[in-house]
Length: 76
Image 1: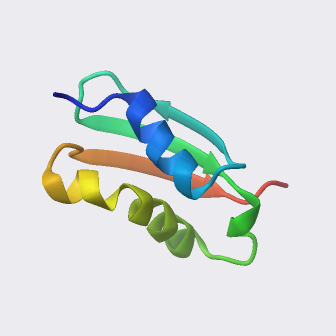
Image 2 (image 1 turned 45 degrees about the horizontal axis):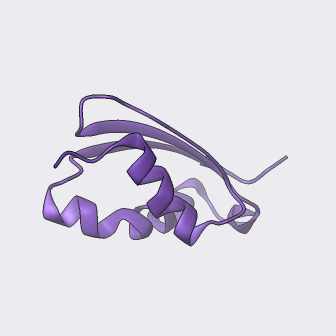
């Protein structure tokens, strides 16, 4: 079964319950996500993206999710 944008949003939401999350993509493998969360304050972009990647690691490792372009930031 292909993964959906909603599935990815739920996975990220488990790790970042208060985040603003927008996931786009409709081919079942390639997606883009924007994650804005207060926990990113003081982190550089690589640290932020590693934190999000950790939340979806299982789907990446299994190959169910092939690609996720991330945009992350702390709220302004």
